[in-house]
Structures are given as C-alpha cells and as structure tokens.
Image (cartoon, rainbow over all chains, first blue to last red):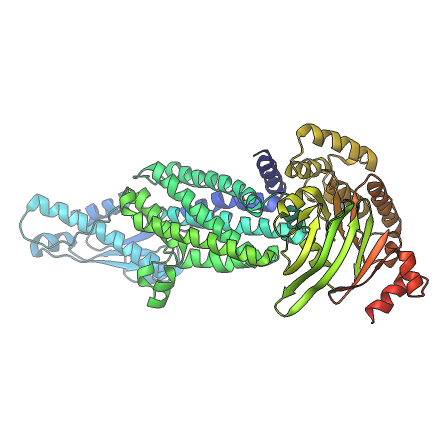
Amino acid sequence: MKRFVGFVRKEFYHIFRDKRSLFILFGMPIAQILLFGFAITNEINNVDIAILDQANDVASKEVINKIAASKHFSIVDIIQQESSIESIFKKGKVKAVLQFENNFGNNLIKEKQANVQVLTDATDPNMASTISNYISSILKKYQQELNENISIDYQIIPQSRMVYNAELKSVYMFVPGVMTVILMLVSAMMTSISITREKEQGTMEILLVSPLKPFQVIIGKVFPYIFLSVINAVVIVLLSIFVFNVPVNGSLFLLGIESVLFIITSLALGILISTISATQQTAMMISLMGLMLPTILLSGFIFPISSMPLPLQVISNIIPAKWFIIIVKGIMLKGIGIGFVLKETLILLLMTLLFIGVSVKKYKIRLE
Amino acid sequence: MMKDNNVIQVENLSKLFGDFAAVNQISFQVKAGEIFGFLGANGAGKTTAMKMLIGISSPTSGKATVAGFDVYKETESIKKNIGYMSQKFALYDDLTVKENITFFGGIYGLSKKQIEHKRRELVEELGLQEVTNSLVASLPLGWKQKLAFSVSLLHEPKIVFLDEPTGGVDPITRRQFWEMIYKAAHNGTTIFVTTHYMDEAEYCDRVSIMVDGKIEALDTPKKLKEHYKTDTMNDVFLKLARG
C-alpha cells in the first residue's frame, strides 16, 4: 500500500509538471463543452428578418407583433415593395422576408384562407429550414388562437411536440456527446501515452526489474486518471446543469456509476493501445485515429446512427461510446433507471473485460 | 551444485525464439564481490541472457540461480536482491533528484527513515547538495548516470546488473563511473556489467565474450590476452568476433 501511494504520487508529479497534459486534462473539457454549448448550435436566436406588409391591417399587425415578441427573430426592416426583396437579401444581413398579401386580414376572415410568403436565404440550408419551421409554428399558433375565439370550422392543424427536448435545444444533444469524448480522450489517450512514455524512456524496464508486479505498475499508472476523469465528469455535469440548464432527470448516482464504468472501459482501451505501441507518438496516433474519430463520427454524437449506411451502422456497435451516449441520454434527459440501460451497461462491461483480457495476453507475450 | 560464494550460477542456459537460439547453452559462475564483464557484439545475445538473469524473461531450457534463487520460479525474490541500470538513462527527468530517490527507495520497500538516511549519504557522496531540488532533466549526462547507478544501489542489492552503463559519456566521467563501480564492489556488491568499450573490459576481474549466442571465452583479462597473444582486450575481442 505504501509503495502504491508513492507510485501514485509520482504519477501526479508527471501530470502536473507537463503543461500539455494539464491542458488536455482540464482545459479541453471546459473549452469543448462551452464551444459545443454556445457556438456549434442548431438553434437560431435573434435572426434578422424583414417584413413586407401589403395588407397593413389588424390581422397582419398581430402576426408581426407575435414575431417581434419571439426571441428568435428581430425585425430590422419594413420594406414597401416587392422589388426591394432581392436587394435586401443581397446585402446578406437579413435572413428571411415575410410577405403579407393584400387584404390579408379580410381573406382570413371571409375566405378562411390567407397567404403569407416566407422567403428565406437558403445559402445556409439548415438555417433556412429552421427559420421557416419557426415562423410556421408562430403562424400556426396564431391561427389556433383565432379558431379558439371564433370556433367555426374543423381545421386539421398538424401538431408536433418534441419530447424530452421540447425547445430542440442542441446543447441537450451535445452534453452527453462531449462528456463521452472527453472521458474517452482523457482516459484512453492519456494513459496510453503515459505508459508508452515509460517504455520510451527506459524506465518501464527498471520498474519491471523492481519487486513491483506488472499489474501493480499498470494500476499505479492508471489510478490517477480514474481520479482525474471522475473530476472531469463532475465538471461537465455541473457546467451543463448551471450554465446550460440541461436537466438531470434520472439518478445522479446511477450516472456516476455508469461514468466510472465507461472511464474504466476507456482506461482498458488505453492500456491495450500501450501494449501495441512502442512510442508516445504511435500511441497518440492510434488514440486519435482509432478512437477519437470513430467516437465523434460513429457514436451517434453528431450524426444519427439510424441514417447511416448499413455497414457503418454495424460498425457503430463495436464503439463503446455509442452505448455510453445512449446511457447518458437516457439518464439525463429521459430520467430512466438502470432497468432500461441494462443491455448497454452489460455491453460496456463485456467490452471492458475483453480489452483487459487482450492486454494481459499481449503483455505476457511481450515479456516472454 | 551451487557453491556458497557463487552469486550467479548458470548451466546450459538457452533461449529460443522459434528456431533461432538467441542464447545457446551458456554456462558460467560469478563469485560474490566480483566485477564480471559480459561482452559481445550487438546481437550476440548479451541482452537476452541478462534479461533471463534479472527475471523479466523466461529461459527455454537450462538452469540458473541468481543470489541463490531460481530464475524460473523465484523471480520475485531475485528482483528484491538485485539492482539494475540500463543503457538508456533511467531516472525520471521530470522529477527532482530528491523525488527520484524517494520514489525508487519506495518501490523497493525502504522505510521513510532509511530513504532519508540513504538520500543524505548519496547526495553528499556525489556532491549534489546544490541540486537536490532541481529536476533531473537539468543535470549534465555524467551526473545523471552516476545518480542512476547510486539509485540502483539504494536497497543494497547483492548483485547489480549494469547494461552498457557508460554509453555516450566522456572519458573522464567514465573513469569516475568506474571508480564508483570499484567502490561498490569493494563494499561487497557483485557487479555484472555489459559494455562496448574494450578499455573498460580491462577493469573487470573476469570477462566473458559472447559470439552468436555462445560464450566463446571466459577468463581474467590478463589470461585472455596471453591466450590470444595480443596486447589489448580489443584485439582479443576482434579475433573472437571475426572467428
């Protein structure tokens, strides 16, 4: 035990004296979560739009007020004729123009049908479709209110409700993903680098010749990273709760346990990588190409797995991150208990055992 | 049979990698307190043989004991009784002199008091008072190597294995290094050293020369030179290595 403490102390010296690893350990998680939370977002806020109101009646004014009241849009221009639409788009600031037809209000009441044209700048197609969705939902809401007051006819109004993430906040989607990527990065890459560093420096040999058993050396090396990864997980969850108001609907305890399991999976992967790479550079390349890319691209973090071609869907199953993201989303957003993520948990557990088993075997072969 | 004063006893020890015999039936003994030079060209099998003796590689066949312990079954006991310093410089660059001593003392199970005592002794002996709290990375190579050697002796091992300890250092430092080796041997530590420098072979009590996995010669430097009728160990080595 005393030896173990001495060993772990030494590992912490290594970590705290290496500015690069400190940055990766603590700078990255915070930077990533803030980046994903604030910058890379699918939501629209304060989009500049212009109005071309050819009706200029009570109904059109009401709609305009509703749009002006929404935090998603700010009306920056009122234009008078249709010919200005093109020039206003060309300037690039205004992303959408709302055109009310003549007699908008009259048509609505008398003919029960009125037209608004929503023109969007589709140079950014994602944004354009989001804007048009937002505007139609405002219009629909207005229409609903009218019908309530007058209650004359049966209109089929499509109602869609987004469950778990009613406001379609993208940060809800990114938090589980970023947490997964960070834990994978810190645990797998940092441990594989720190173990191969000992090999490269020749100190691993000295440790193996010492009375320490190989498994003691490995445990001593990975222990600090379990500790630091848990801190990272806590930081990420706190940031998401207090900065981005992402709820944790399920049990924090369960989330903690599952995170520790995933950390251990990643550490096992890190150890496995260190057994097959002789230098820190190789370890880093394997971690980045072999782990980070699939973790980001194939785990369902950014791109939905169900819309991938079949071969990629199959491959996604062997990526530990995929299962962990399902677990984290389930616990944080849906508030489900262990019963619903049992399958995913077991898969992670099996993967961990497999990685450890293969590492032990590889390690022995190397010693022969 | 093992004699009392033989700390290393090797009989027909072999290590095969597939069909290739890296070490082919070597036999030799090393006496307590002896400086034993283990020579050979690159690839002759020195490192493989040494790895079997220090317990990190399992022999294919043959018998060997180190400090009285069997290399097959008692590697843990062997590890406690030997020190090791490899050709790569092997202290932690990002730890201070003091932290390195504390760490290595710790993994050999020395108590805090013992470590403290050893550290004082060692720092004074090497004249490192000024730099105990400096990172090892900032020390000149010669100092690092002397420090590494002292660290390998921290737990007072019976035998210390040195794998090309003086690679890359200047002649003066090498000289000083050998003075430290003599001193350790004088205090009763057995020294098992591999080297490329043939002038260093002259400093050994006895040397063995390995060629292609076999020990081709084993005697005192003086007798070897007489036997091969040369003036230097270098010529002895060349005669043997070229067959």
